[in-house]
Structures are given as C-alpha cells and as structure tokens.
Image 1: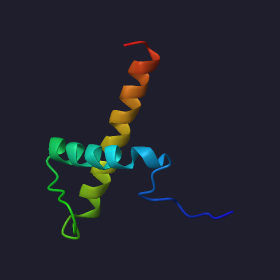
Image 2: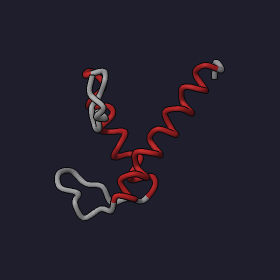
Image 3: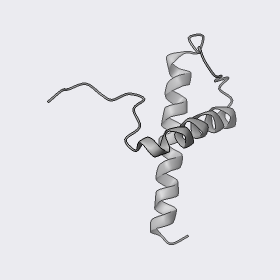
Length: 69
C-alpha cells in the first residue's frame, strides 16, 4: 500500500470533465486567475485556496442534499 496522495485524480472517471469545469468556476468566483494550460505563475496558496473552496462547496451541496433541500 502506498502512502502517496492521489492529487488531481478523479475517483469517478465520468465526473472528470464536470470537476474540471467546477474548478474553473470556483477559481473565477474567488478571483484566482486560473487558465487552461500552464498555471505555474500561481502561488501554492492560490492553488490551495481553489481546492479548499471546491471541497467546501461540495460539502455544502452534500449537506443540502442530505437535508432534503
């Protein structure tokens, strides 16, 4: 068993394109200039903020679904 983290890996292959769109929507929403292709000019903080905010939004959506809203 590996101790590495599966960074950027989608567990449900059918959701890959939707997750990619979601990433760009979130980046736009929070003002991070994420673009297609190379993003080496972004800081690790900016990239982390996009990922963290994606997780926050996914948790909120799941909580709403579980609450029947």
